Amino acid sequence: MIEEGGDGKMKEETFSLNSKISDVIRDEAFSGFGRLLFPVDLALSPQMTLKDLGKALLWYSYVRPERTVSLVNELKERVLAGKTIFYDIYSPAEKAADPKKRDTGLFFFRGRPQGKTAILSAGGGFVYVGAMHDSFPHAQELAKRGYNAFALIYRVGAQTACEDLSRAIAFIHDHASELDVDVSDYSLWGGSAGARMAAWVGTYGTGAFGERPYPQPAAVIMEYTGLSDVTGREPPTYNCVGTADGIAWYGTMKRRIEGIRANGTDADIEIFPGLPHGFGLGEGTVAEGWLDRAVSFWQRQMKD
Image 1 (tube, rainbow, N blue to C red):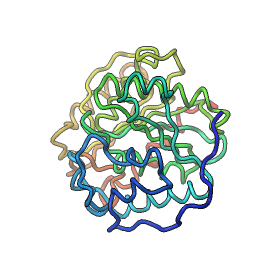
Image 2: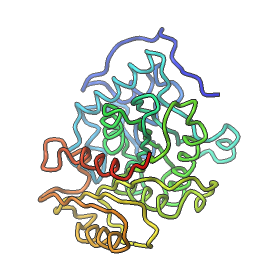
Image 3: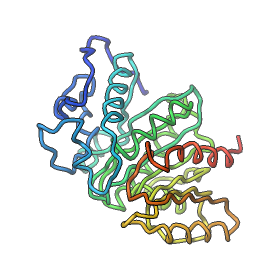
């Protein structure tokens, strides 16, 4: 049974640009999972503030501290309102057997009751999980539009990351009624390494990564990754990337989308002039608004 948390007795102090990351982690509202709000695989200074977090997020650009502050405040407000914002995807026994599984879970940004479901995986080069820039903001915006968005914190490493994403898909499907979400026509979203995860699990299925088979996503939404494989089994795929990306060349992504289309599967790509790797939502750039176009692409694939 999944129970709603929050006892309404916590301090209602809000965070600011000058709040220390260590204070956010230790806040009572985030007891038991606060450390997973930030990359556990990076050695962040206890004195680092929310304003300076972007300096630690390797390979990312256009990190907006104001967005970071709004995210942690919104999540705390939801806890104070008695809502559950975090779910473990592994049992205590599984985490005891593999302590790395303690560094996993789902942050839930609730949309409409019985709204469609999106599962998001941030990038970080399979070295760390950059959720505060590469999945939390997207989930926050999707929830504003009525979608139920789950941001995954996963074990770094391509294989284990895909196993964790597959487990997240299984968890959400198996608990859909209790979560009050619609898993039909769900979508997988990801940036950089997270985009590879979305593409791999979307293409090969959860059965290839240790779970029983679950339905293929209606759409895969990918940002800035140089994945080139086309198998013929890809779900409908939306992609976006900048021409100044020194990590994921836009030409590779363009050829992959063309290959997916050649197999008769719907696929779109947006290429943004001058943008580097890791632009996230692209707020204040030529990419701003791409998320709504990606949502429209996803809606185009919905059957229910």
